[in-house]
Length: 607
Image (cartoon, rainbow, N blue to C red; front, side, top):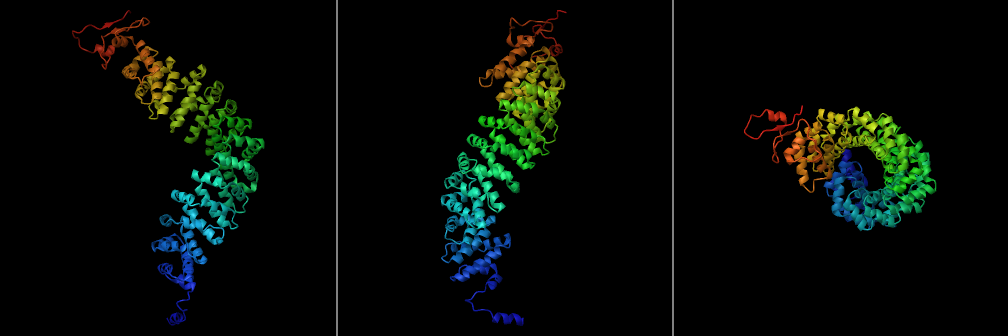
């Protein structure tokens, strides 16, 4: 106690402030000091609050509750440079907290922070002002304010700061800002490309990485890609890929180049300088899954343009894509399969990919990865559409059985595309017979009962393709497929309804199947469809006619007449005209009825 008393008696006068004593005071007391008229007190109080806030998020929340931010905000425009600097330091460190940022937005601090970015200001002020702006720029309304209040120009200027922290904070802020298309156009006008390319040579990997991420976002715009080419940016990017010491930057570099591949003019320039060959050479030897996956995705995006597909084919991009199917990474295989689908739009690519790629793709159908299975069957659909040779390759690669098995997949996209491949194969009689012998009709019952309109449509189309054979129709009858097929006639989806009508028409090719289809109410549904000008189609009319022509007893009962081409055979009976909506009874059902005084039922039995 004595020592403590002695220490208190030796304390300095009240107008001289020891920073240690200020730090030892409670946060509430230090916050009160922010109202002091003394510059030195203000500066040291801010310094103490900075150290307190740096110790953790809980301390930041404490200062927020004590109203520190409102006092600090007033100090941002203080005439004393040291007070202003220390106040901004507290702002910068506290802005990492979400609740703090909410209040900063309410206080509308962006304009005050932007004013601190003037060239003559202290580098520490630049550091913490940009840090605070970077934290706040994540939120859309702040992005708008920074843009409207002219914050982009000083931020871009500070990319050239000798202080790496200032550069990093400014770059991070710009990265968040350019997520908005308006800011992307603005930074392009402010000539952001040269400083960004310059930062690719920074000694700090975090700055290089941020520069590449920013370039990746802004290069989504064609105008930026043109500027990248003018400033030799593509050469810079390719040089990074060729430098193994910069392997940590390869994924992000590839993302920028991927955007450039989507532009025909840019791609032509890369091709002229041998850049595509360099790029593919790098990709072929890379074993990094992210690089392989992103490269395949970039090719997929680029291949939507026909001219780009030609260029990629000339550069033999197919070899690279096929090599990716051999990797041990499912995500890479998925991306490669999607790129193969996109490149199929080029006829020459389709031939190359079909001959060499189909056997690899068929092997992948046995994968347990449902997303991979979907990507693979989608690629097979594109490869076999309007290409009989590729369809034959699928059969030779023993792809029919795994394709039929895929009709039980979990993803609707996998099911619908597997059906599409099998339907493509059915155009060749030997392949159709082979598919039918492996139980296609049984496998189609599940898809016919699907709730997905795409699956329903493909399944009905497949029934139409395979039911031209009497054995296939018998199989469909026996496995209970006719009921779900007739149900699809009720569909509100035009394509589903049209394909279901087509399938019913084909199924009505023999009397037994036609009778079964009618038993499920197909005639009533078709008549109803044909009464609607919006819902009827050429197949609905043809289906009704086919069913009636193969069920003459019911036709005569409904229509009251037969056509000259209709030939009555054994089993025909006339039970009188059935009213619309009434049930047409079979001979068995009629035989069970009691005798009445109504007119007799005429039954033809020449035997």
